[in-house]
Length: 380
Image (cartoon, rainbow, N blue to C red):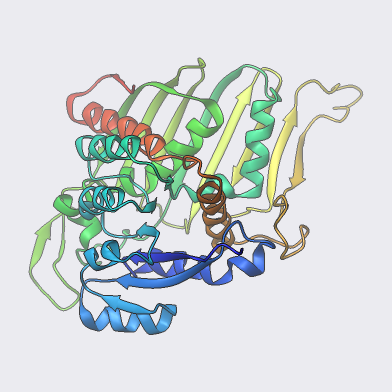
């Protein structure tokens, strides 16, 4: 007998809720076969009006302004958490208690205490719980993971990692939940740094300790587009971190929402005794690799960075587009959710798991403590 489709409930239908909805609606085109059939059952937003619009636009069977209605439904098996950070602990732990599979957007929570609560609930649960660290599913970074695993760079010595945006350069941009410390828990570090911290750990292993500086470049912002009144900003516009890894590598991490000229730029370099790798999200079709074992004679020999054409070389059952076609940002999310559904179908833990979200939260907590107190802080 054919297994009935698993029902999906989407909590939050802002930018990320739309992205996750797109992934479900296109999954069977990109992958053949899919790990498990799914259907979009319910969507929850902040008001009845937006819920009605999300239902129609996203193709859901019903909409609501109370996410608990999704948890009560026997025909909803999967819950996506696409809400502001202050809702994560309540909503994710409730979904786990209701016996749902959970796919949670980053960061795991506003702070370490809330992340610990969520991870503890997940360890006691019996379903699949996964983080939306979608950049693990960029083909070039999937290849980077293989090269690091196979020892291509040899002993890792140093690295540089940055995630750069420019969305908060304009001081007239008004307040939002991302700038509200009570709702977000932090600024660029939680918003962008969570991704780059996970990538560095994915490629280099565990963090040992960090030293960090944060800064707010626009200390007050308008409360709305029309308002003259301003409100204080209490979350970081940018963070700079020195890092020591358990493997012995030393490096720097930067997360910034005020990097004029940057759009959505992840810059990553890892240098080892035998080689190096480099990647930039704005040129996502290529991984750059340098083999230090090649002869440099005569006249440089064959030394130099090689562009590996990772493009869209996803493993089977990826079916569309063909591997040589250029890759795009939405495709990373489709691949990430496909991975989640593979884990659901197999009854496995999520990968990356909520525990890995917790590890990233510990590093971010250490960075904030360092920025506040000064000096090095253990990241474990």
